[in-house]
Length: 83
Image (cartoon, rainbow, N blue to C red; front, side, top):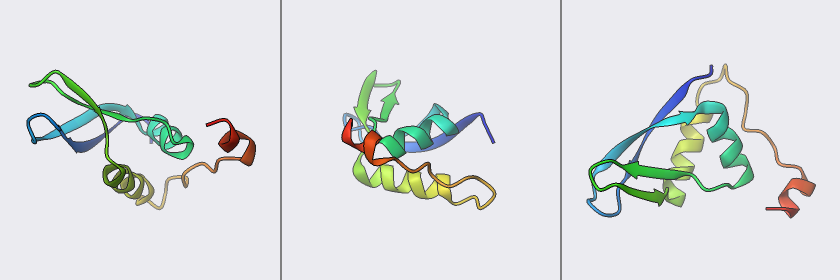
């Protein structure tokens, strides 16, 4: 299932939950698997921030919850060495 995947992240400036809906599911899976930065955005504050470790965990769980989807891609030791 491709397309955008919507999740919530808390803006560190105003403290409100903001919908993050500009991410493709496959891109999120890859970014999580490779440990890449995933940023949230608040239009009201015009603020970008890296999502928290807790939000990354919840996002991983949400993406993995659908049993019909493929599991998170595994990172090879070679890829891990170049992070």
